[in-house]
Length: 162
Image 1 (cartoon, helix red, strand yellow):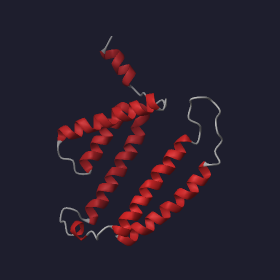
Image 2 (cartoon, helix red, strand yellow):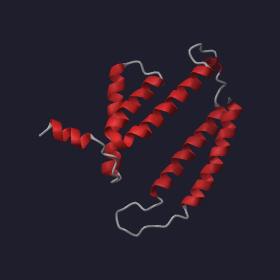
Image 3 (tube, one colour):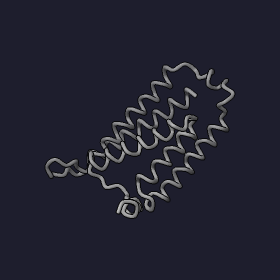
Image 4 (cartoon, one colour):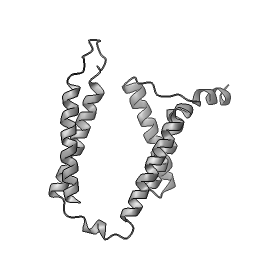
């Protein structure tokens, strides 16, 4: 596991350097008080760099994960199926996102992911998925001025609240 983490981290670091170099070639916008085209790619570069360095540190300095490997609840097959189910949930999320809208599609998606990855307390699943959805909506809509898919929510609210 250590060897795989180190190799993956080195490959990701190389990709991060290439991605960062390509980001420097994006044009700069001259509008005041607005993020330019390189803004989000630089955020991606910094996050990918931090995660890659974390993976490299884990591979270099972490103890061997014998305790995790000996845990009967975590087998490679179950982890693989969990990842496949999560990918399937993501594909379904992408399909229903334009029709349902961000708020109605994202909360159930996060709830499914929380349950898939071991959260058993239903109150935490409900609160967590709603809080993450609202937090992301506020961040992107009001913080970054990015319009998210509205879907059917405005029509539902118009019928419910006359």
